[in-house]
Length: 89
Image (cartoon, rainbow, N blue to C red; front, top):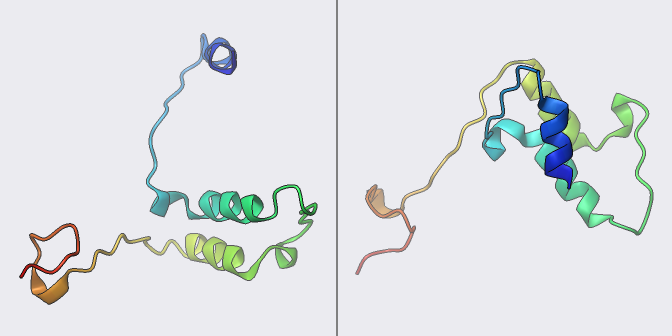
């Protein structure tokens, strides 16, 4: 039902939908995980910048500074072909 409603709202409008990697959407990912941890146990309310968790403030400040968000992969023993991060023996 929700998809039909979304399509109806998008009708006659120019809309672009794109997938964004988690690294590019860190603040939404942070709050999704943060809220999930407190689901049903307490009300979360933030009325100003100082109220939000320091990790979220750090993400906001990083985005404001236009610093890149990088996806870093670690490889063992310089083995760049080994994508499952296990050591070959």
